[in-house]
Length: 165
Image (cartoon, rainbow, N blue to C red; front, side, top):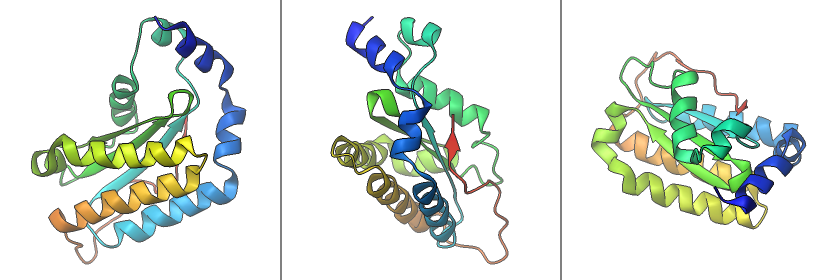
């Protein structure tokens, strides 16, 4: 257990999320997801969480482990072509995780997602949350468009709105 991490999580609340992601930023994120999804047949979700709850935090839960839980909870795996992607931000840690469904993961692997996460985290360290998320969405979209070209008449299988946990 890292005492500094525990203190960061205990002192990071929903107000921090609202400051980093005001309504105009949430609107820009939703718009970016909608526009990006028009260029491919994948589904993108963005979720941000202020901090971990106390029990998982004390048990040492990582952002990656939490991202997998959120991926399941939001049912990002529940797409016709197994082409859902979750971009998850754990604000207290400034840690970004990308979880891709098996239809995408088998084609791209983890290195691409890790590179996108590190770029987003660099923007977050500078306090550029909107720019970091938008860059991440567009980067994920570029990779999806290469492997999942757009189909006419495809339904939007998931909401485009960001999720605040």
